[in-house]
Amino acid sequence: MSIEIKNISKNFGSTCALDSVSLTFEENKIYGLLGRNGAGKTTLLNIITNRIFADSGEVLVDGIPSKENDQALKKIYMMGEKNFYPNNMKIKEIFRWTKEFYPSFDTEYANKLTEVFELSLNKNVKSLSTGYNSIFKVIIALSVNTPYVLCDEPVLGLDANHRDLFYRLLIERYSDSPSTFIISTHLIEEVANVIEDVIIIKKGKIIKNESREELMSIGYTVSGMSSLVDEFINGKEVIGIDSIGGLKSAYVIGQIIKESVPQGLEITKMDLQKLFIKLTNA
Amino acid sequence: MNISFNEERPIFIQIAEGIEDAILSGAFKEESQIPSITEFSVNYRINPATALKGINILVEEGIIYKKRGVGMFVSIGAVEQLKGKRKEQFYDNFIRNLVEEANRLGISKDEIITLLERGYVK
Image 1 (tube, each protein chain N blue to C red):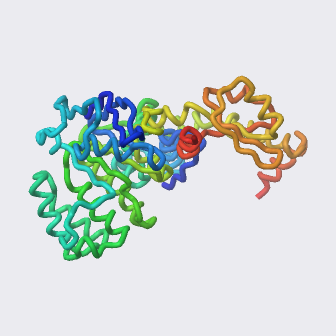
Image 2: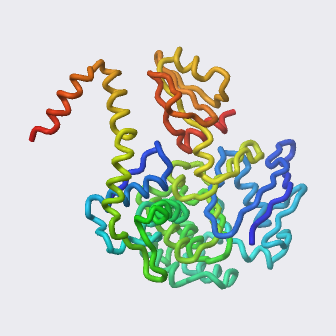
Image 3: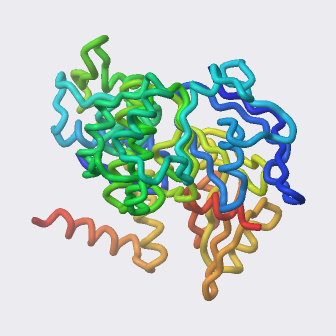
C-alpha cells in the first residue's frame, strides 16, 4: 500500500515546476514535504490528487493509476490553501458534503473538534479569519479517515496555541488509527519532531528523501575562531558558512569523531531547519 | 517527567534518557507501569515511531519490560542497572566537559579539586 510517483514532470509555460520526480509515500507514515515557496510542493500534491495533470509520468495509488480514477482518488483527502467551497456554505454543511464524498468521515469527531477549536458550526466559510480558514480544513483532515491525508500548509495563520493543538491532535489521531499523512510546510522547526520521513524539494527536484534521523545525522556544525574553522573544513564538504566577527560556523556534510576535533572548536548537531536552509539556498 | 529537547542529540535518545531520569528519581518505581507510547508521543508532540525507538532501547537493556496487552513496566533492579550505566558515562558526560571548560578559563587542576571540595560542603 503506497502512493507511487513515477517520473512526474510539469511545466507551466516556460517554468519547470516538477522535473522528473519519483518517490514513494508508504502506508502509515507521517511525511514532511519541505520546500521553499515555489519549489513545487503544491504542484506535486495537486497532481497526486488529480487537480491538475502532469505533462508526463504517472501516480499510482495502491498500484492503481490515479489519473481520473475515483477508486484511487477516494483514498486520498487533500486540504489545500485554496478554498473550493461556496462562500455562503456553513461549516456544518461542508461537513455534510464531505461525508457524501468520503463516507469514512467521522462527523461526530469533527463536531467535537469544532468545540475544541471554538469554531461555530453555523459560520459561513466567507466569514472565517485566515486562522479559522485553516482550522476548519484541519478539522476535516483529522476526521476524514482516508488512508492518505495530504495537508498543504495546514498551520497557515494559526496562532501558537492552535498550532500546538493541531500537532497534538494529529499525533493522537495517528496513534489511534495510523494512516499516511503528508504535511507540506515551510515552518519546519515545529513539525520536525512529528514527522518520520523528510522529503525536501528544490526547484522541482527531490534533493532529499530519507528518515528524519538519517537526515539530521548527515552533517554537523563546527564553530570557533575563523582560522581554526577554515583549517578544519579544508577538504570537507561544506554546505554553508555563517561568520560573525572573527568567529565562524561551518555546516559540514559527513561524520565526525568527536575525539579528533582540535581544541577550541565546538561540534554541534545540525538542526533540521538549518540543514533545510543551507540545502535549499539558491 | 519533563524533557526539554535540545538539538544536540537524536530525540529518541533523549526520550530514553528522560525515562531513565524518571526511574532514577523514583518518579517511575520498579514494577510500576509507565505511560504508553501514545501518551509519550502526544505529550511531547513527537512521532510515535520516535517514542517507540527510544523505549525499545530500554526494553533491549532490560530496564523496561512489556506485558502484552497491558503495557510497559519498570523492571526489578532497573535503578541499580541504571546507576551502573550512568557511572560508566560519568566521565564522558561530565569530567571531559569540565576539563575542557576549565582549560578554556585557565582553571588549574588544583583549583578544580578545591572547587570540588567546595561542592561537597553543605
